[in-house]
Length: 126
Image (tube, rainbow, N blue to C red):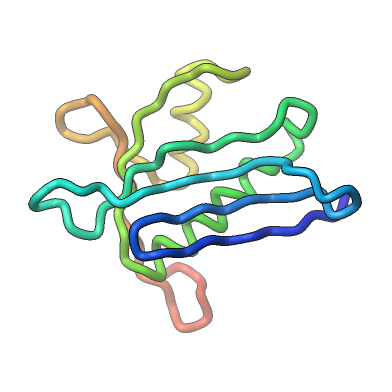
């Protein structure tokens, strides 16, 4: 299936959307917004990762995550994530998914954090 990726990369919001190229319908999206708390500069809250049910298990969530990671690493942003299973995956499955992208449980054990990583000049990780 051919798809289109659209990115909205604003100062206080990041959105990545995947559309079915053939019929221009939404496949999935990822959304982050700036964490507006004193002392939390360059931190964004990962508010949503969604793939429509008929497109799940086809690697679209991974495609969205790769785009999000590329943006946050370029902008040197850390992500805060609370895992709330409400779809097909359990909490344990979601933890495993996000750990693939270097999310780690914070010291308090109440959320996950992914710190930005340094990119080499060619956009590959060290």
